[in-house]
Amino acid sequence: SCHPARMRPPADIFVAASSVASNCSPEFKSPQEANSLLARALVHELGHAVEFQLAEKGFPFLERWNSEGFASWFKTHAGQSFVGRDKVYNRSMFRAQAKELLTPDWRPSAFNGSSEDYMRSYALVSVIADGRSLSRLTDLYRRMARDQISLTVAVKRELGWDEEQWVAEARRYLGSK
Figure 1 (cartoon, rainbow, N blue to C red):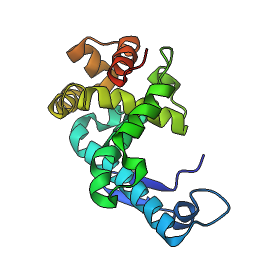
Figure 2: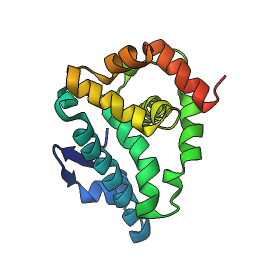
Figure 3: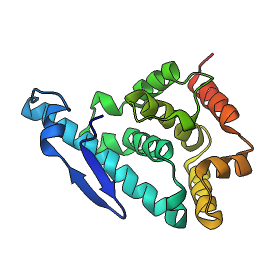
């Protein structure tokens, strides 16, 4: 329920500093921890700005799970450059958490904005960007823009995966049983 930062296209980033500095709790964190939290929030929001540029005319067709999954995936790649060895950006930790949370019956349409759903959505983006290639992901965004369709439809057309198969592919990629 606490979302301390937002990106408004094309790249306006708004941050509620007190929410970031407290990590949405009643207590403020140390200055070092608050700085780390701010960096995490900014890198995540930068991910939204990058996605906006990738989506072009397909931007209105992005779904919330897709946007949050992309920004979470972006954070694992770009974040280490900004914050160093912060545990939050550790890709293996992200993968392990997503592996635990991505159950065979979860679907993107069930996304409710929870931190667990962010991780599940990260897995769906990661299976394409990391499991296939970043160029494959950008090709899907180009298809979205050209055909003005959602990423789910682009994945179905390009990869032949419906939502159930996409989740299964992501679970396989993460090493889930």
